[in-house]
Length: 151
Image (tube, rainbow, N blue to C red; front, side, top):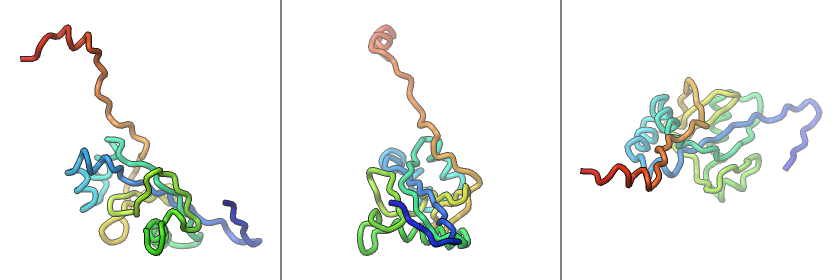
């Protein structure tokens, strides 16, 4: 959907929304509770190292606002209030499994990352959402059989 702007109007800013993955709660409940309760650089980094953040949406917010105001608007636009947030104007959904934004999610505006805190937002030093999840080495059945039984 393309929006047209009046002459002299500035285009809206974009806020990228990254969810902590549903796998975080299932496989890493302690890390998940840390990032949801006390979101900070370390707790976000721990989930990022495991590849547990996924891009969920891009939200358009008016230009000219302070970062905190813009983040609050983006947060509101990603809440199921009167209807599914995925129907809100200025929201591009990227995830296949949308949910409302919550504590520990990361919002990036103008290249600067912030985590959703219990109240408001906390600035992060850095955020690399494309970190690769650690992979266990793949071993063939022949390799395992050659080692014999473990005692």
